[in-house]
Image (tube, rainbow, N blue to C red; front, side, top):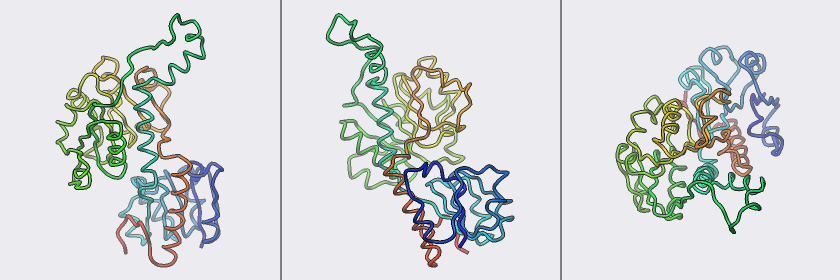
Length: 321
């Protein structure tokens, strides 16, 4: 089997091994692949492994030999699943590999906003503590999470783990989900409608998938329903947030702060107005990228392909032909 990894760098920048794939066939690995390079690199492949490379109907019809697409991510909006099924191509993803890492990063962003750790570390290194007349000093308001309400939009694996961490901090947890979540209610987490969640939450954390219904879920109208000192955290998908509306809300004091690990365009344009907002923390889509999560991702991606070769595909996300 000829296996081509088209954009392997983010999964494995050099600290993991591709050995699992090499045991399954003849492997060629590229760190990155542009749309112009796609056909030449994949035309003789039986299987391609991708992360963010876009595979549409046109590409699927051109790649006559292709039988398998392994996505090294949970999201799969970069592949035309219907066209893949019509062309007899199996598509798999890797669910739940980053649950603990993304929930952890959610709180890394939130705690940075509440405690301003990086700011105070920089001030200490710049001599402010040495020049202080008191045994301590602090810039801006420091806040604790205990007793505050967190509203979680999307109570899947990551949303549930985020809720558990929030509860450990002494936060009250409410959530909005399209489906019943008996396991969440059993832990005392309270389901509410979206409007109620927005109005009651001190912290709003996004953990829902990107669909046409959720695109720009956070917009001028929904922000107007929030508390003025609310904090927005997004470790899910950038286009869930109307960034222009968020910018104006932060600038005008309609929200206290935002912590974002994802943006609508990645990498972002340098002139993005959010870049200059002191009450907006932005990290470069790294919530998923701990070493432990990437090890799980690599192992499952290899197992998905091995299972396909053996005739029993796992984690298939398109219709079977």
